Image (cartoon, rainbow, N blue to C red; front, side):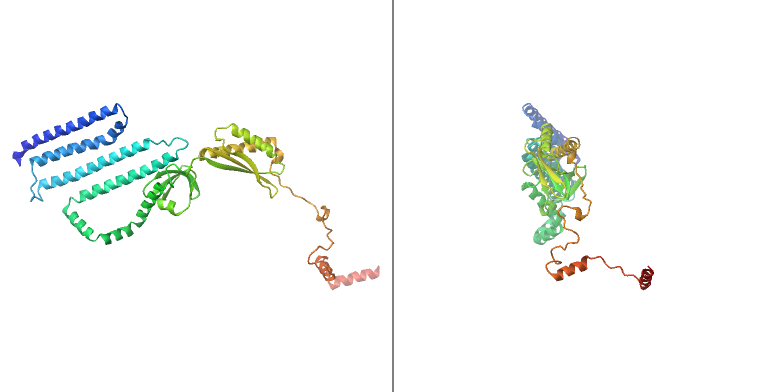
Length: 400
């Protein structure tokens, strides 16, 4: 062994020089390309470190294998352990480099679609799908790397052969054990590629209004308007109905309803609404009308219908319109304020009312028997006095 040390150092030096030359060459090529494009900067950020580590590891491994050949019958010596360890390390670094390249490629795709514009539906769809594909690719790379590292052990290969022999039973058991996880996984893929849900979509879920902040393989995070986070499994969105306000576009309609008096000047309200909408940037100019949609219970319901570019501006626009119309009614049309009317008086004094003693039409009219029933049910009840009071009253009458 010791007689090979000098050869080992020479081999290490040669391999490291070759590895350094490869790294420098790649760096020079990257600098030349960077003069004409910006994407090499991001590639260097993601892949520079794992690439260099992988190149130098391979150089050391090649130098060691060339200096100390691995005999086929040596299954327990240090060279066997070293080769197995280097295999596992190289697999891990290779998986690191592969995931870095996947992240670089997906970031390049995401950079082509901007989401900070008004109509960003297509960009949000691509962003959601690319993010899911990136996570799937990284998960596959990690699984393959872990499986490859485990297969370097003889005992694991033996177990793998026995598992493959009973693959049918193993797949059934694994499917039953991971039924919920697999269900969420397939639901997440279905949501993304069916374009039913995207990142930054405005949704109403469980009575909460918010935006889709994150879409993963198993759950979806909804950022609620008051900075809470609603975390739901992917199967929720495939089994229950939910509102998606940005499914086809970000434009949206909203209403403002007000209960006012019957004396409300509708034309005055319409003039004030037009003035408010013309003076604000929240309105997109599509819809701005006011109508009386109901008039029962002593009040008139005026409904204002307005439109905006997105749900956030619509909320502010509705609040603005409501405040301005309230101020207009208070100062320019106080007679339109909601009023409760109460009429106090006897029914006999009301115009057109029947006299209290006249029999009404129905079950108490139409015949002599009906008139008799009317007198029985409407005449005052007689006052019954005791015998002593009646006798005293008769005596007083006789003395008089």
